[in-house]
Length: 416
Image (tube, rainbow, N blue to C red):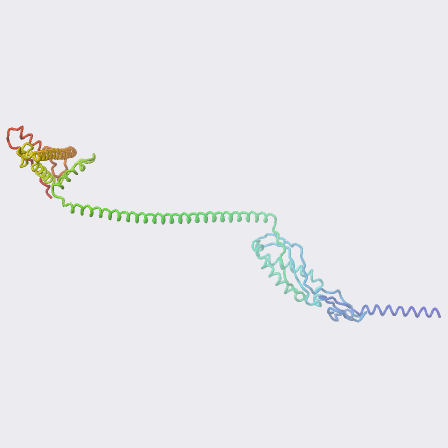
C-alpha cells in the first residue's frame, strides 16, 4: 500500500512538472520591434508579432529573435586602387534595416557578412573609375552609388540599406606629404593674393583720399579767389567812386573859384620841377603849350609890376607925395607908398624865385635828355627862357641905351 501511494505521488508530480514545462513552451512573449520565426516540424509556419503568443509545444520551434530596428555596422579599412594607380584605405559605415524577417532568415545565411562583402566589391568598382582628387572631393557621389547598388542587391534578402557613408579615406603617406605641400603652397598663394589685394585696396583708398583732398583744396582756393576778386572788385568800385567824388568836388571848387589863365599858368609852372625829378627820366618831353604858359606868366608878372608904385609905370613913387597935404594925410600917403614898395619888392622876389625854379627844372630836364628821341619836340634851352624883369631893368640901366632883346618864341608844337 505504501509502495503504491509513493508511485502515485511520483506520477502526479511528474505530470505537474510536464504540465508546467508544456505551458512554458506554449507561451511566448515577443518584445516590441522584434520578430520571431516559428517552424513547425522544421518547416516555416508563421512569424510572431510583438506581444503574447501561444504556440504548440514540442511541435513548433521559435527561431532567435530578429531586430527590426535600423542597424549600424562599420567595416574595417579596405585597400582600394584608384584610377591613377594609387592605393587608398577607405572605412565605410552602412545603415540598414530588416523589412522581411522571413527573407532575412531563409534567403541568406549571414546577411551582415553579405552586406560587408557587397559593399567592398561595389566600393572598389566605384573608386576604380575615379582619380585621387575626385575620390577625395566626391564623397556624396560615392555614397549614392554604393547605396543604390547595395539596396538593389539586398532587397531580395528582406533588408533595406538606408545610408552608406565613407568614414575615412587615407592615401599613402608620400601622397599625404605631397598634398600637404601643395596645400601649403596654395595657402601661401592665396595669402599673397589677399595681401596684394589689401595693398591694392589701400592704395586705391589713399588715392581716393588724396583726390578728394585735392578737390576740396581746389574748391577752397577757388572760393578764396572768388571772394578775393569780389573784395578787390568792391574795393575798386569804392575807390573809383571816391576818386570820382573827389574829382567832382575839385572840379566844382575850381568852377566856383573861377580861375583865370594867369593862375593856371602859374600852377602849370609849379608842376614842371616835379615832372623833372627822378633818376629814370632820361628823356623829358615838354608839351607844346609851354610857350603859351611862359608868355601868360610873363604878361601877368609885367602887369603886376606896372600897377605897383615906383615900377616905372603910372604908379607914384614915395617921393612924389605932395607937400601941401595935411599932416595926417601925408603920413597915410607915406605909409601907403611904403607898403606898395614892400609889395613890389616881394612880388619881384616871388616872380624871380619862380622863374629860377622853372629854369633849374628845365636845365635838369635838358641835361637828362641830351639825346632826344626821333619825332619828339626839341627841348628849349635855359638861355631861351624869358629873363626876369629885374634882370632886364638892370641890363637896360647898365647898357648902352639900346632896347632889350625880346624873349624867343616858344617852340612850335610837333606835327601830328
